[in-house]
Length: 467
Image 1 (tube, one colour):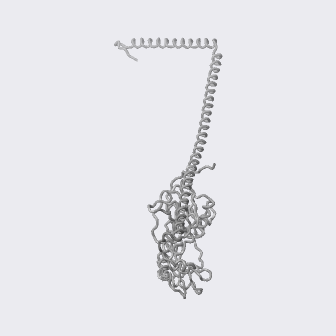
Image 2: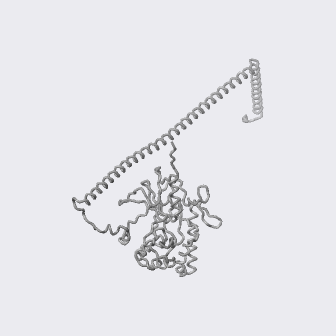
Image 3: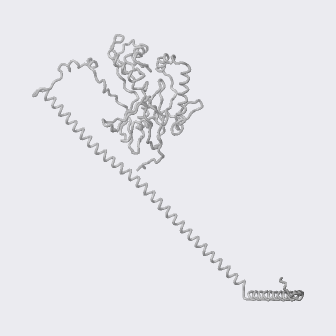
């Protein structure tokens, strides 16, 4: 069984990038700080640049230079605090993978499993030129050109890019804000254009993915931070119910389609874990659904069975009729289908709970195995320490016995050297020295007595002189 790896690193505070983008140059979110990559101009960028020339010419050169300097200083300050990026000699920022090699699929923060508890407050500013600002225009005349469409839609806001499909049958137009795109749709949908009636709808996000199997403690900020490793993100949302509780799925809208494809491929080939729970999230392409505009009457008038279906209007079926019997059978079938689906969901829920219990048992078993191995290592270390202690005590005991043996040998040698003859000679020598000292003392006393007598004789008054 595979070992379950856990991380016990120091908690970090994530400096999440703000979710606002500059015009023409999106700001990829990379780890702790926003990262701006040099963008190669395409044909669509050239058209968007022309639409901004008039506005930029109105600004003074000093003001433009000041704004550029402020943006440059801000980018340098943010990127200097970001450990996941380095600057080359030309000053450009380059991303690198885990081996330090530039990578196209991982261009955001390194997901090392460090604890994350705090995120900065989300940015509430309006994003511009995102995938949510794209319009789908259908029923175009064959003579439609990019300049004509730009002139038509530029009345509602700035245009970033225009893509005309094959045969000029349809086109995609990206505007600056979502509100401007909605205004253009509401104003131009159904309007005539060069002899055709335009059909304008909000286009599906081309770089959006759906993430399922999310743990319950995943927030919008954590989802944004985790998937920003694949590239810049425009929006990351965890889907919730009417009470704000997570439904264990989310939607991520990347700025580039390649980032969405890289995220889907990476999550399919490997297991991306967002929290301590070993629950891998699954990423798939998001199927777009229009729950706002729906299907208006003008969009179905040209269907082949429109006339036949509309021959009879809304009604309640009459009893004892063929129509009523067929409707009841349909209701029974739908009810049976709902019951079967509910039974299947109940069965799968039970299996899921059992699977969760098995995984928890597996995790506890692995942890118990590791604790048992650690206990065995500690016991072996204790036995080794006891062995070393016993060896040290034996060594000290042998040294003490050897010292005592050496002392006894030296004592025996001294006793052998100091025999009876040597002892008697020493006593005689001491006795002679004592006798000599006694004689010297006696001689000194006699000399003192003679000196006293001579002094008494010399003193006529009979006084004594003490010396």
